[in-house]
Image (cartoon, rainbow, N blue to C red; front, top):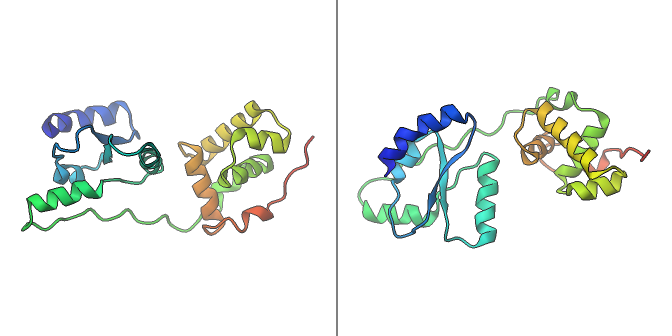
Length: 181
């Protein structure tokens, strides 16, 4: 099974650069080639389909923000099968470097305001109501923020905002809010 997938990985990554690849595990009883997955730079994890929905969605969120996920049960199963062989896990990616203020310097005051609200976890409709904007306008601002920061989604943009504030939200509430026009 993985041999066939190994042939497809280069084709997939060429056709969709930057796309995330995760193996979907539909049957928990079937073994998954852990060694091959751990050695693959393209595969970011294994997504078991038997998880509760809230946990499954959390795994999806983790993968979308650049994390990796391999179920512990899968690792335990593999280690029982190879009790004498040591399990070698890949090194965790290096933590992001120090914050570069230039990352946020290209944002307008309104975009910074919206990014701060996104980083607090507010939905577009709540942001729109608080700033007396249309939800469509908030979406346009958010699109511009994501483009300027070079991120793929609002979660990654919020992570940059958090990093700019030292990783906490204490400083976020001190940002001035623009008056509604």
